[in-house]
Image (tube, rainbow over all chains, first blue to last red; front, side, top):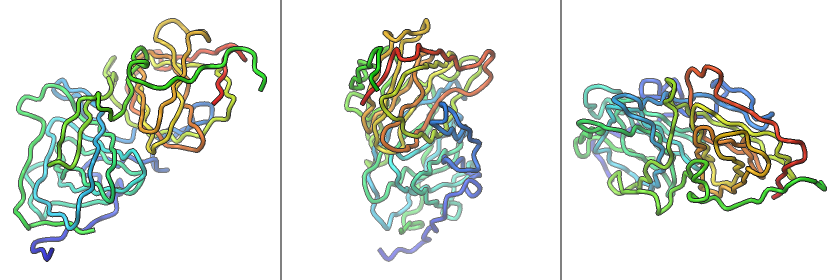
Amino acid sequence: MTAPGTRLTIEPLTAEAFRAFGDVIEASDAARHFTINQGFAERYHDLARIDTAGGGGHSVVSIFKALPRTFPLAITLMERHPLGSQAFVALAPMPFLVVVARPGAAPGPQDIRCFLAAAGQGVNYARGTWHHPLIALDAPGDFLVIDRGGVADGGNCDEIALPEGALWLER
Amino acid sequence: MTAPGTRLTIEPLTAEAFRAFGDVIEASDAARHFTINQGFAERYHDLARIDTAGGGGHSVVSIFKALPRTFPLAITLMERHPLGSQAFVALAPMPFLVVVARPGAAPGPQDIRCFLAAAGQGVNYARGTWHHPLIALDAPGDFLVIDRGGVADGGNCDEIALPEGALWLER
């Protein structure tokens, strides 16, 4: 594809770079961790702000079986969950792409960033963070998802369209 | 080991067999599932009763880096979390063992059962279900754990000792 518009830069995923969008879920030395289970496990504790209780909500655990995308990939929509956070952790060590924009007004192409979640890294979108649907790479993959269930008057998913051809992604 | 006492039977893990103890977390056809993300993902929805809100609690996501056990393994202790559920999902397709007893009075050896979680299966212990600490097999492995955080007057972990040599596990 000889695309007009802007090609997104793929940035490394770090807790600091991702702070405005949510949490990186990983067993890093920077996390609080301690030994449990008579020495048979190290607990990397409380890695994400799971924010599902608003409006009488609760945490829901699901599995997404995702198909890989093909590239170049046009980024033509973004969504957000105004009532709760949403976490994604791959159930095998595999990378995936995370396309986000800060909570608030609907983002334009210039507001959108892309991070490469490496094998062993998951993400938790903060409530209201704009994000593209899951972008799996290379092969089908399963992801554990922790998000909000419960009554959602007016819905818990806003979606916006981006101008065709304005933004795309190449590996 | 020429052990006295009882050798635990290792049972296959099914939702039905595990019902008295909690949930099996897996993308099975029996789960409610539907297509999302413009056809790029199938969502297996709400696979576990995450019960973390009691007593002002909330959901906490952690990673356990577990070391494998050696066998035969003596089962000498069980624990329970009286205030909340606790889920374990392996972050790579690998089996692990799940040793449980029903909520209620402290179990004796005869009350304890063992299930083999196959690759792709996780578990969620219901609040109060007695369980042995995580039993990883073969190699070190990472597990995503979803349990309860928050104030816990009197603690959220009860532990009991079982008689030495009364119960053991062989692969």
